[in-house]
Length: 404
Image 1 (cartoon, rainbow, N blue to C red):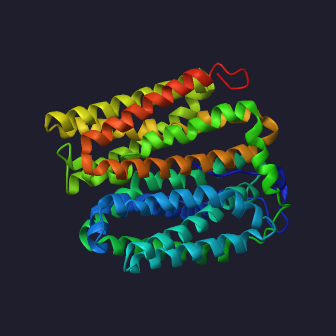
Image 2: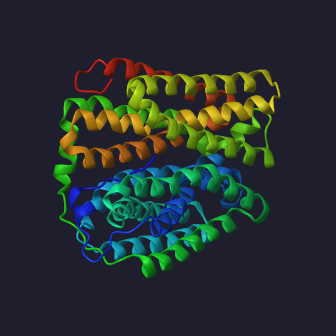
């Protein structure tokens, strides 16, 4: 679920860079891997965070909520305020701030302190990820630009497949604070590499915030964009509380790590397949399948929780389907938005990213409120939200300005 947007000026302004191969984009991908891991790693050990800070699991989930909300709100503001900053300096500064924020989270003595550090981390992530995408296409020959962007986006998807389960495993052995220290260390290593290997690229012309938000008035955009937030709300109602949720279907301890791994593998597969399928079948059909599968997987989880049946294989399959359904949304939604207003494509991709994180934040709030009611209730709410997204899709797909 990338929030990478690229303007023509950024892609073509290659002042001191020599167009080359994909080698240096690996450094940028390492940074997006750190960002992706940081965004969701706390979900793997929220009960431990809650116990350490003497709050409820739902209270600890606010750490995920505030990160998502801060990212969504900061993304357009940071892009506007940092437009003229040289790209290498911005990359390094963002990674250093992300390292400091994670170190602060690792040292947090209480929940308010943790929430402040998560907001700082979100601001740093909002500065880094779009910049990494723009720089990646400025580093390579024109025929390699799409692949360069894919490498950077790959850092986020690999973080989902590997970073979060690994963080959960490390947290189980060494504690949640150790996992955050490792993320901080990875950010510093990447900052050093970026400072040493990235060329000096100038900033671009700022796009006024008013111009960024003006795209929301387009009828097609107004019909499509809310679905991004709604779909992500459905996808993340349970994710931040994966530990108690999986416990409710008979999976705990190291089993949770495995299930998060299956979720991540499904996420990577769903993200890749949906882009290809959207070109051949149309984005609306892909989204319809995605929301149907999401509702089905959540319903399956709810039935397992209600009956007390222990079926780890079924949980693993449902986890992979859940991940695929969650991460298949972004390519077709971007397709619909860009078709609705092609001239505003870069701004729409950025606004879609804000909607993604608003949905993640909303889902985490809803999940936190549902935690005391048990896993079955959490999964049922997520299923209802997925069906609501499907209904919204059925309605807005009739809008002439949206892609079918």
